[in-house]
Amino acid sequence: MEAEKVVEKSAAEKLAERKERLRSLHKQRQEARTQNHHEVIAEDARKKLPNNWESRRRQAEWLLADDQAREEAKAQGKDYDRLKLLSVSAVDAERIEKKKRKRNPDLGFSTFEAQTARQYNRLVKNLPPRDMAKYEQQKEELGEAFYGGPNTILQGLVKDKKSSIDNMAKDLEQQIERRKKYSRRRTYNDDADVDFINERNSKFNKKLHRFYGEHTAEIKQNLERGTAI
Image (cartoon, helix red, strand yellow):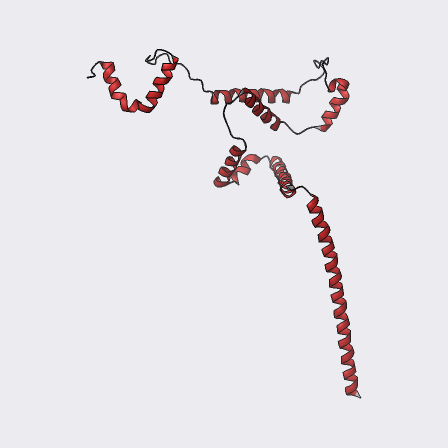
């Protein structure tokens, strides 16, 4: 009788184990079904997003982290731009510089229209972020004159801030410096030898000297001394 009880008890335990295993498998199946449903919903939401959403998200996160680091450096009285450069290697700095030149190449002067368009894009890019509170305040203060018109006179209605005037003066000074740097005009040297008869001949002589000057220097000296054979 005792042996039969032991056999019956072991069979009941086996049945209980099987039922427990079935419940566990059923629970895992339900969890997998729920997880798959969530993944399908998330994938459908990702498909509805723009193609460059991931890059835009990473850029936004980088901007937020950069602003936070800048504020922390400012609170500590440190120069954030200098600290940032200290963590950039020479290889990365060269790669960033090449990328900047590729995005905004200096094509030189082509036409006045292209020059004006480039300057306009540069000025718009350097504009500060839009202050919507000031925008709404000006709209209320100016009324209909805010939108302008053929008979609108803004003289005396709008007063520019000192910081805006300083920014404009600084930009004009930078433009003057850039014009000096990229100017193609050549200053006339009064002490230079006159070996030309007109402007066109002067340019031609300079071109000859640029290519053959070092090879004909002795001949020129002999001609000037009058000892040429």
